[in-house]
Length: 84
Image (cartoon, rainbow, N blue to C red):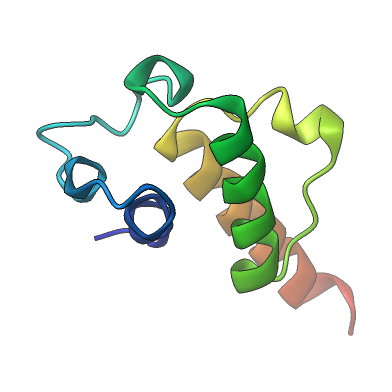
């Protein structure tokens, strides 16, 4: 299970987010039943656990599990190679 899926299950308590068959990777999270408060909490958890910063502009582009996973992967890779 992806880290984003794990965070969604932790945040919502809904096991549906653990199963790609129930909530697909490209499903809009807001349309899947997550409210705006949970989306803000998700951003805070991602920032805390993945060690990446998510700005308000970034949040506007993050709609699905795939979006979050790609964002974290790109930021993590950029941080690993850019500070040497």
